[in-house]
Length: 273
Image 1 (cartoon, helix red, strand yellow):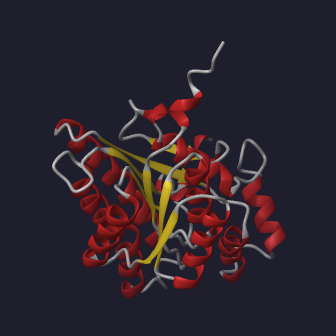
Image 2: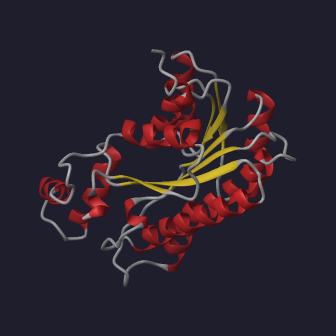
């Protein structure tokens, strides 16, 4: 009997744009979408890292381009979306992955730092949704609907010591996602919008996050921090970058055609306890 479900998870003929794809998670998402058949526009404010991701995708046989992209700037958004449509032929999937994190106790978190994190994580995602919807809706330059996947975080669902600015920004992404989803559905745009909520991912980036707890004097060393966090994950293991990539692929694909406004946790049960 032929498998009629597998094609729904494919992205053949689809065009995807992944922001912050010079980093670990963005690169994993771009790689997974490309492996499923999508052509991918890789964007990042860091040129060297972004180019490396695009080069790796092309080396694996995918069609990929790179553009320098400041997600806090609307003109930059217009430029990369226009370039995606012009060079790759459309826009069907937008993954708002770009983000920054800085830990500090509430009494030590500066207004400038707080605003910077909101600007990149929250405003950057807002601009992505705004420009993405404009292009993807029926009267837009791409005009065939599609899927928007916003990267929030487990910290966008629960409170974490010293993560005030980041948690606030990712909580904003969660509810922005729901409002975009409802509006796009009611206006019959053919655009779905969902959020992903990863916990700590096994990577140098993940260790850097955990090291912050040592630097703030909350734990004695990195090994102790890792053990303490892992003890709070019911599945007893770390998320891998590919786990986040696979979740993004699901939400981007037609397999999730009736899913919009949802929050998908990729955390081994961390936020369920």
